[in-house]
Image (cartoon, rainbow, N blue to C red; front, side):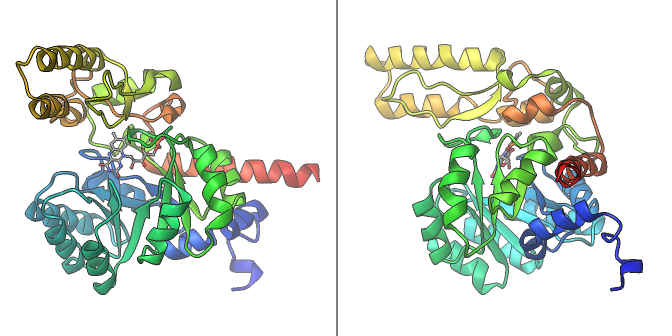
Length: 349
Ligand SMILES: Cc1cc2nc3c(=O)[nH]c(=O)nc-3n(C[C@H](O)[C@H](O)[C@H](O)COP(=O)(O)O)c2cc1C
């Protein structure tokens, strides 16, 4: 390529950004190392193809889909984009092996295994099938173990994120993991809403970033208008983790917008605990009653628009959702903020 036809020649800051995330773009096979984090009910054909068509990397959220449903969703997405995209599978799905097979038969290039340490059989199937495996690491020791067992890339997701979360913030995870894990690309996630913040993590050694919340409210997202409006109105402090009332009955923390449902969940935990204490419920049935409280609740919020009783999963980055923008606008804004930060620094030097 000559200087005359190199698009980055006129923009030294974009060239710097492209150099900083080169490992990520090469791994994903797209021009921007920004993954659209899989969001159950939200990350379907429309959002995923829009992200990939705009230069990012879309990821289908399989969630609780059956293998047949996933096969249809992949085919529909492939009909809407010729660009690469991934599929996120939850490791505790009872049909995990079949879901992996569906991905491989559809020639999916990147499989994300989420929701716990992936079983060896699924790791082997993904790798033997020729797809790249992306896994989540909540600590350095687990990141290293995942890489030894075959993960081709790692996502480190801080507790600022929307949805199911771990206990540690991205600021701390990044310091714990980025300086010590160089074998594979590492993507940062959780609370990211601006390009200059992504830039800072790239400079620490990340290869790219994964965002969910900002994309959920995009024009191309099929989320109900009520869901998007709630995102546009909310501040960072409105996106809180679910609270566990009694440590005998564990609750996996989920970050979302506080609403009637979150208050009812507290009452439900208290009533269930009381029933256990009075002997009306066994420990096991009480635990199940607590776990089942939120069944179907994300769908109620995302698809039906019930943002009062449904589960409005959102990251702290929700405070940076200011309008219903197109995916292309969001991606351009993120790149623009990163390159503006680089330009300001270059001009000050
Ligand atoms: C509504 C919603 C649903 C989500 N569902 C999933 C999911 O099904 N699987 C998954 O691995 N992560 C899920 N996530 C997490 C995202 O993939 C992503 O990592 C996270 O949103 C990043 O943090 P951010 O929201 O601050 O951008 C979800 C997040 C949101 C907001």
